Amino acid sequence: MQTEQVRNIVLVGFMASGKSSVSRALSRRCGWPRVDVDDEIVARAGKPIADIFRDSGEEAFRELERSVVRDLCVDSGRIIAAGGGSFIDEESRSAMLTGGTVFYLSTTPETIHKRVTKGHPNAPVRPLLAGGDPLERIKELLAQRGPAYAQAHHTVETDNLSPDRVAEAILKICGPGLGKNTRSNK
Ligand code: S3P
Image (cartoon, rainbow, N blue to C red; front, side, top):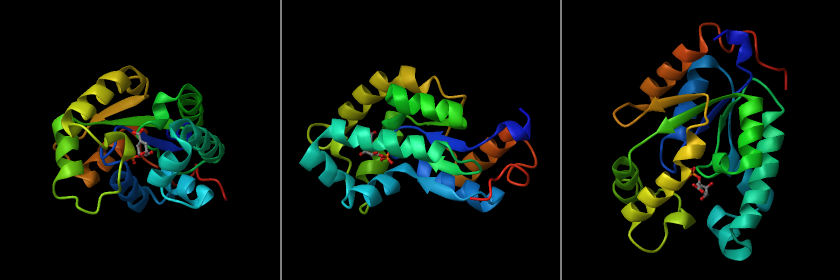
């Protein structure tokens, strides 16, 4: 792939697949600023994601997500970390696929389960995993979402890799020189 073809780097994948930490590692390495779709949603709504789900429901959340994704994807030279369900939504997925090079950070259900339940006491509340058996819910959602995630431009298996190693793998795919010539002045 030619470096100039990478307009934005877009990270997609299940909840807790490491999108935020990998986006930070990428930003440190290539100098592009990182933006987080969930953070932007929270800023626009003025409340946490769990409250948006509780007060207005998932469809209202997805609508907000669509408009944030649309706005972020028109810029260039950014690392965009997207929420786990955004790439499942057809409109958001299409905006990401045309607005950047999309990397799916693939993770097993067991790894995700470990990350959302153990050792991450401060992990943000994930409304879609609340209630019931979380591992079963993760498996079910991953199976539903697999066909959408498979449409990413690239897949990186992340189970045994640190965020820095994942960032290295992504930058290798993007090619040398990324971040030097392609960043917009915004
Ligand atoms: C969601 C993932 C969350 C957040 C919301 C919905 C999903 O983001 O956007 O809770 O549908 O998978 P993370 O992937 O950053 O946890």
